[in-house]
Each structure stands twice: as structure tokens, then as C-alpha cells.
Length: 92
Image (cartoon, rainbow, N blue to C red):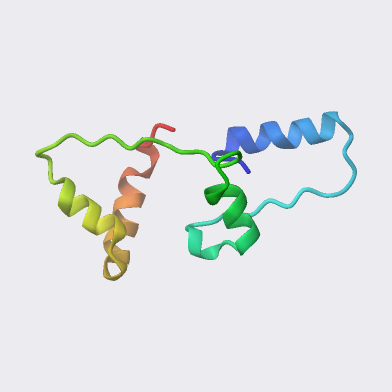
């Protein structure tokens, strides 16, 4: 599993260099609900293979409102607008 295009390309390059037979399958997930149980276990539940990213937010800047927008089911339209505007600012 890759977290970005550069990592994905590195994996594909390694597969080609090692002459691994078969065809790589590249898919993207918007959220955990789209994964099957095996993928969820490999990427999220298994401590040996999962990756954790620390999120840091400054206090006093509207954090509760931001978290509500990011997590509330009824705020999908707001979330999309926010991601389109600020999605490229993430540092992973």
C-alpha cells in the first residue's frame, strides 16, 4: 500500500526491477468503509503493517468546528469544498 503517488511509483519500479510476474492492481480508497476486511486488517488494524500519522492542530483556531466538518456524515458537501481548497497542504 502507498500513501502517495511517489511511493506508488517506487513500489511499481521495484516490482519491475525485481521482474515480479503478474500485473499490479492500483486502486484508491476515499475512506475505510470502502475496504474489504482483509485490506482493513492490513492497513489499519495490524500493528506490524499499519502506518499512523500524527495530526497537530493549534488550539483556539476553531478546531472543534473543523473536526465536526471533517467527521460529520451530514457535512459531506462542506468536506468536499474544504478538501478541494486545502487538500494539497497536507504534510505526510
